[in-house]
Length: 206
Image (cartoon, rainbow, N blue to C red; front, side):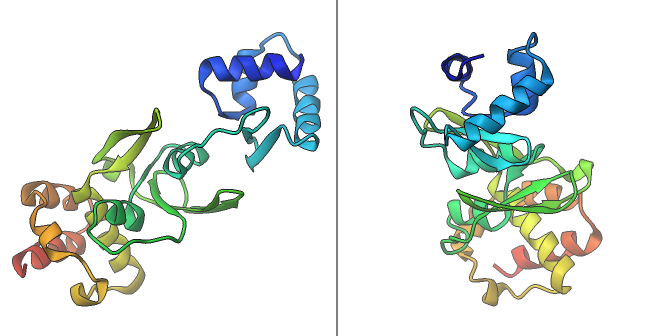
């Protein structure tokens, strides 16, 4: 298989980020050993870039402007963007520049690559909800609803430090007031009593 054939197949499928498994699906007649040898060769030629073990980004002859939020979804799946990243996007907290934070049902992980830092916090399957699909540069991205992003944040804040100080968090209180209270309480109910109680207390003092 020639690289131009790979590029055309990935371009047609919009698989600018692809896995070894994707290649096996696109080229089922190719031997596994041959595909792995070609991946190694393409890496040496700087035609593809390693995102993590088994996941690659195509960068030649054209490197795409792929949103970091989309990369976060692809890097560790299932996952959706949440916590500080989502809260910053929704202007609930000041702008955050340190990587992309996400929620997953898999073990907590952290990846660092060419694009930056990607952090993932783990929740139980029943709490893996409350996200929407947005589109950026034709890339579909899973991101928490603003209410779920706040509840996710509160849950892990309590998990890490047992308490949360609203003033220290620098929340934009008018932005929180605009959130849907019933949705906040509903999302909080999927976590523990401490999270639910803290959400109610914060909203009661707005």
